[in-house]
Image 1: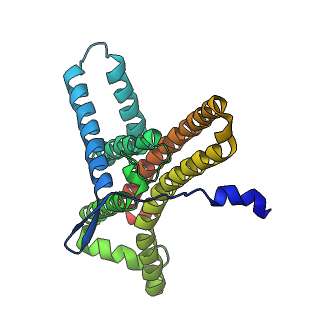
Image 2 (image 1 turned 30 degrees about the horizontal axis):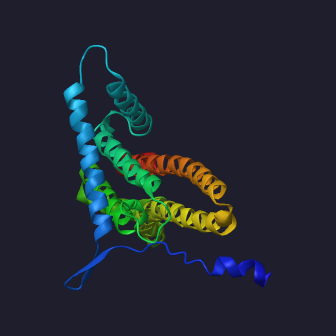
Length: 260
């Protein structure tokens, strides 16, 4: 068994390393910063292209794809929140497109120690920032929906009768604390695991097929392509789940207490 593991133990597998820069007491992951900026620029460019090509007549393929996306999100919002949730549609679509774009950066990775263009969502800081932003907007919507008094009353009066107010406060408090954590870790965990699997795959192929020359290179490329296609599907699913949970959180915030 030890002889079987020895070649693999000699391969350096490192995931999560970044190009870093110290700014005062802060350590900034510069590769994540520029990857996030590039992803944002791509999303804004797509929006500008859509605006330039938008027509009230027969839509092109690009406009049709956007209309299908908007229609799907609009249907989901209408089914869960109703007409009052129309303002959430732009946020949900923006989150989905931006997160999916960030996740696609995983495709250009090769499993090296430092990627030139890492997936920003594979670093916990970006998913946490997006999750906190969503939760703040959800609480803002709850205050506007119920008023300040109704907002605080909700934590003491739901889901059990008011006489169990301490239990209600404890349960609701835990729920609100868990929301940003689950949003963050679900997205980060899947993307980080994707990078780890890519590194393991690269190491495994180098170990098992490195001595096969050209054939080993072809097999390595084939396995990598198959994994990247699977990784793209995971990226799309995670972007959809993040947007869907955002809609559901707004549904809870904007619903009257009687609906809980």
